[in-house]
Length: 480
Image (cartoon, rainbow, N blue to C red; front, top):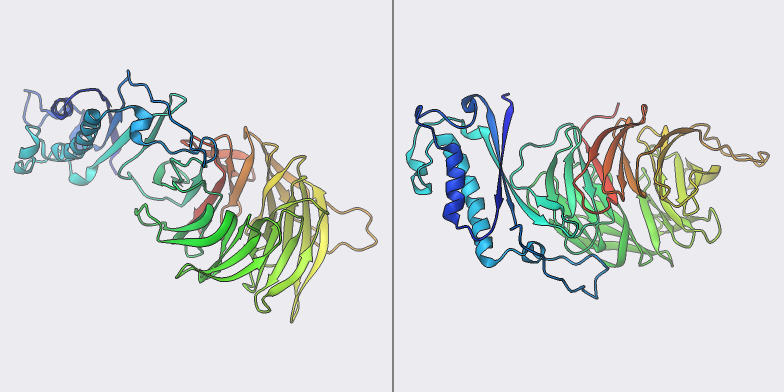
């Protein structure tokens, strides 16, 4: 594999004509008098080349004042490209022409002919293989803070061992796909309808469910199609949790409208709806696929028996304290819940012939502030908690015997690691398949990949312009 030779061409749009832009690009590749095969790029014939064309607004442009949409939350308006950058109609035509010229540049680099766009197809001599040229067009727009936000064109590479899907509550950006090892953002999905509250990847790793306000949108992970394959409509409030059946046949969601719904994933229709009576904060599916577990703002954890179509158990860890998150072990042996006071509660689940027996194991204070998310690792040896105190913690799961009545004090899980470095609330997390790595999403705009054993940050995924509120890890590796 040849190394990549990057080249960045930065345009400042003003009243320049497409011809001017063309001459600028052409001058970079015209062979000098020394010979027909020579080029201004050093050793171009021995390198792969990435041409990055950055097109930004005029320096003198000033963004017009925007009126706030009274029907939308503050800061959630979605200005157009013209509103954001102040580019006039003439400059927008130049922008479109520059995009077309950038694509044409790939042909110039491959053919060595830079005489004019109309003559490109006539040249037969090649200085660079066609597959060696990648053209990335970056449309840069000025944000209110003065920084540049960008959306990239063709992808330079695909996923490595895994990919991180993060969402940063920015209505102008939506969900971002990051290559886990390299940290490259390989894809962005726009989600203009609302913020994204939760993400979930289907068990076959083909689909991504993005839960927003009132709807869940299903995307094809391997496709470049920016549009959802299916939209699930039926909730009347923010959707707070989403999970897939083990074979992807159905999906379950929880919502602030106080309901938990089961959806048929092929048609997007509601199959069942269960009422909590208060806002539901989270939902998970028991590994037996016959029960779903949800929690709500009134402080209860409910286990719904799908065969009997009823609530089989209701647990109230602390009276009138909202339960913010629940998680169930991959082997179905443990159930954990966290509340807004920072406390964690653990129960053991015993599968009997006709029912599930629930016995308390322990409870302990994990954080001094709101717990936003807790998650058991795939190997059921670790419990991760995320909090408003700007940390994520890893707890060692051990001694899960049911607590006897003779025991005066509960046995808290030993604290294995405190992941510091987050600057704001940590909202979500996801374990790798081998439980060795954890990804966190934080309001400080970053998603981070941690090695659990060393407590070190392996990779930071930056590029978000708003807080990262949810994350999913598409791990292609096998569980150890």
